[in-house]
Length: 206
Image 1 (cartoon, rainbow, N blue to C red):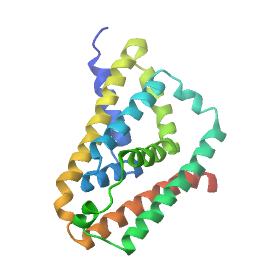
Image 2: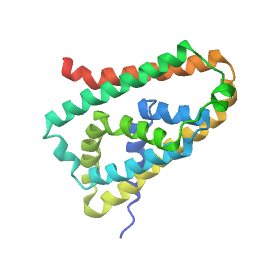
Image 3: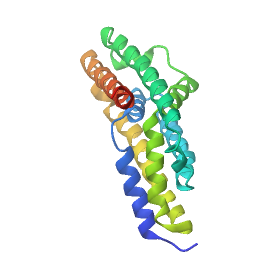
């Protein structure tokens, strides 16, 4: 296989721009990092989902999504509903704030619960499927060989972002010893989830 540096770099930069936002998925990983609760697992789950779905996009299947508008509409509604449930849980934690020490000392969520929530946030996000269409179009510009170098660059971007978030959360943990800081975090998380939920359903409203 001929090395294609242009495809590799484009795959990394284009994908990093698409995912490097504090969306619902990123906010969840960052929060797990601050809690130091299955943060690396959360990052790896995000990466594995990207490994599969970006491969689908690079293979060109993502372009089919553009031809199934009803499927995207259904995903928008389901995703918004799930995000609103997560907003409600964050609001409960805002009303009854704890310190990080109390959260850590309290009942810990098992890894399967963290994985379940993260998979739900990711797979019910219609924007991810829209991004697949863009990834498929960009990858197609590099031909049958170059597109897989594009894919490696894209996976590198995903790993850099999500593992970086998990580690950043752990570094920020000392800041969350107070109830006020915890309220700020939960408020930010709720705001992000709410904004993403609106972003999902707004095309249907308009």
